[in-house]
Image (tube, rainbow, N blue to C red):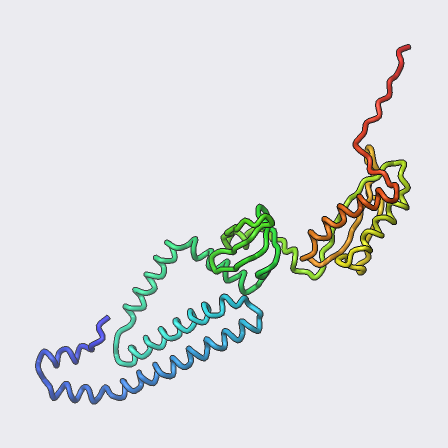
Length: 281
């Protein structure tokens, strides 16, 4: 891009210093206008960046993208105003814009996968289907969200493994967020023998649920017969707790129900098979 107009170049070659002086004086208003465009443009760009950050905070977007989006927007606006200033000075910026557009297309084709990851990251950070600290399931992997980046998301599994998941995989898969709601239900099934007292067993389950401060009284725990198995009656027990207390309550119920059944004399049967021998006639 040639920043020196052709008339200046011709005058310099001809060593016409008076002409150079006169032409320079005639360009002063354009220089002032270009400087004004740069000053006002940079102020507008900075103000726009601040307004965007404010809007992102109001939308409760993840803080990790505030600075990034602000930088991109400010850079684009400043570039536009710089080109406008050059155009005011008589500089032909069309070839520069064309080269920039061609380079952008070429880069876009070469970085198609990265751009897809980037777009998916923005979608996650703006729509926030999950946040840092949430426990999520993405089909083949589940864990607690540790970090949300523009290109990938970091999960930590229950056995403390660190998993890096590409953001495009997250946005294209079914996602379960276990901690998005304030309460989570635990569905449990306990077996008792056909000879056991069903009402006593059901009351034992209610007593165990009432004995934990982590189990919510509302919604009320549900205890009911759910199946007549081959060797046992199956009782369903549904209790509610905070998502963060899920495993504590799960393990508490498994141990405490066995102890309570033993105390109440409710038998938990082994798998059994009745064999009837038909005598030969």
